[in-house]
Image 1 (cartoon, rainbow, N blue to C red):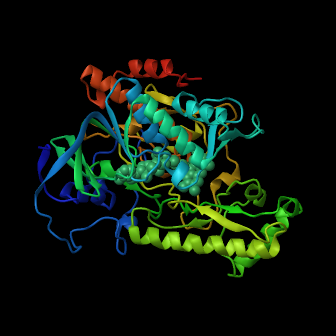
Image 2: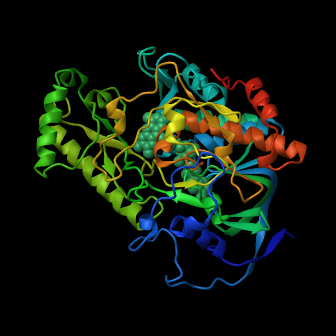
Image 3: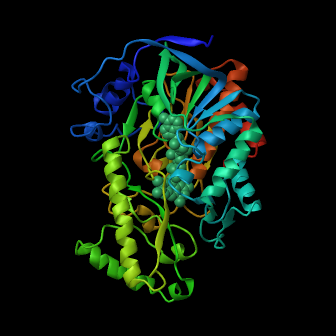
Length: 494
Ligand SMILES: Cc1cc2nc3c(=O)[nH]c(=O)nc-3n(C[C@H](O)[C@H](O)[C@H](O)COP(=O)(O)OP(=O)(O)OC[C@H]3O[C@@H](n4cnc5c(N)ncnc54)[C@H](O)[C@@H]3O)c2cc1C
């Protein structure tokens, strides 16, 4: 007979409503995060009228009767989401001998790196490499297998690798299996069962109904923070001025470009013509564009949309809009760009590229000052070096990256452990782009390599916590730093 968890009431509990409600305006009643937090939660607009991000007391509702749910499996640590943060968290915890389950809603790992075709990995600033550890291994293995190549321009520009999207899925499968992680693809984490201050289980929706996964420790690496939100951890959403999050992007790749003709392209002239057409309303907005990148099989990040990534109607609208835009650009190039006469779209992201959604309140909140002043922390789990790179929340395609306001060459900031530790749920860590930061600092620490640093820190901390019988908040910091260093993470202060 299968084990069941009785009394699960509904997939949208009151606790879940409360998490959204905090972001929607009740946030002022909360105690401020204990360290560094300067800016208040963003306004309610993103969850306000016209948005279906989360149910409100006024929304029509159905009652779901209490039911028993079979237990799929039990483990030491359940990691939800297999993006850069989740994969590194799961591998780190498993390498420290924990029984780890990883659930991912798509049918492959890599997060935005694969699903949204974001394939550019940065491991260092213009002078000094600071990203090693598991992310370093992912890149090294890709290079050895011929699935990832380094751009030649380092030093001087950021050290950059381009990973083949399919290749990344393959390498991550291997690394997860080798570490002994029990991975389940096509398994979205849903309802979260909380008792007292601890999560007991996460329910995943399967083809045969909901199934529960029980664990001692949970790591939310879903990017959007689905688990933490449902566990009632308060979060912020969007920028302070109007509650809007960074713009989203649909990436896509072209085929059938004639490279000999394409070498004749006058990039500046084409972009100028595109700008004129856009300003006349005959071409949609577009972001920074290098046509040459398409010629060599790459895919520039130039097809923007603005919306709320937690709102299924908005996401659908943005997907349809960006697919329309993609064909409008291609039609234009077929007429105006030499070599592109027969260009065809061969692939687009399996999902819209989402840069920002929930940012949870944790013991520490990373701020723009931390990033820009390359601040160091006693509880560092690694380094970040990326600039504040905000893609226009209104969807124009503009990004502050174009202003070139890099951190000083050779300088990096510490990524603090405290930004992953929520105050109120005692057995949860939040890693990756949903960890605690301001809108501005998030625009730096969201980099895939930085999310991977967080993931390795969270997975290792979970192992130390369980080994010592402590909560994540009480983990011995010097021991965590020593362990991470021994595992190859660059963590020194300089
Ligand atoms: C268009 C675009 C371009 C970018 N360019 C770059 C770049 O050049 N270089 C760079 O380093 N970064 C870039 N970024 C940022 C980077 O891709 C993300 O910030 C990073 O991938 C975040 O990592 P993560 O692991 O926190 O989350 P994600 O990569 O979002 O991964 C989260 C994972 O959780 C899964 N998930 C979500 N909900 C659930 C659920 N309920 N249950 C189970 N699984 C779930 C998702 O399917 C996904 O696999 C870009 C982002 C975008 C959108």
